[in-house]
Amino acid sequence: LPESEIAEAIEIETDESGSYHNLYINMTGELDISAAELTLDYDASSVNEIEWVGTAKSEELQTAKSDEDGKLKLAAAGTEALEDSGDFIHLRLHVDNDADLRDLYSLDHLRINEYDLTSEFDDKITSSPDEMADVPDEFKLGNNYPNPFNPVTTIPYQMPVSGEVTITIYNSVGQEVMTLENAEQDAGHHEIQWDASNVSSGMYLYRIEVRSEQADTFTDDGQMILVK
Image (cartoon, rainbow, N blue to C red; front, side, top):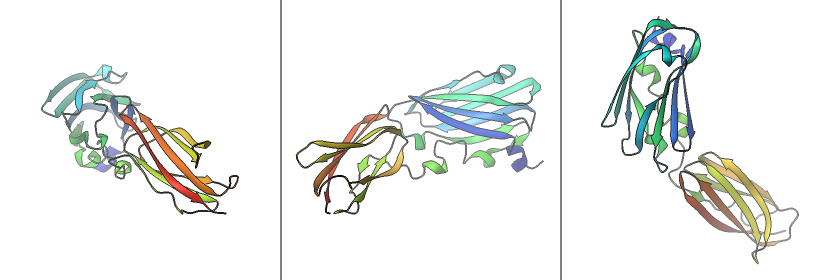
């Protein structure tokens, strides 16, 4: 079978939890697996340790690992082929809280059984997937638009890491008018609308606060004018 069809029997998953970044390589059940080789290049200045996490599938494998100078090499093989579905490789990267996840690691080599699948997965086994391409490098609160406005305006902002976002509206004398947003949000570009139909014309202040385990608390504010 061509590598492209063999690749359909493998699924990649990643997730983040605090200072951990998890990488899972899963079997879909369409291919019995007896051996695997994996090489990752990683940022040794941000990754403190790469931990092999045991799973029900991996317990049936004999494994060997070398880890030096930002390159992890892993080999796994079993006396009997693994069958059915499940994750057979789970790596947990222990990373610094301020690490840039977009440049954390990338695939150098992947072989499953006799099939070289490197080219099939080099854009999937990475901390820089397509959906992270537009993740900003810094926090920023943008200017609302339109401004002046009546009665709806949009407030843009960006976050390089996930965090708890609070956006609050104040009047010209500093009294709180409302909390516009108070929720956990992912890294990326965001915007939120404020409908000021129920307040009077005048100058208002909008303030953002982002609290994250991966960065210092970010706060900023802007001014907007409501004209009815």
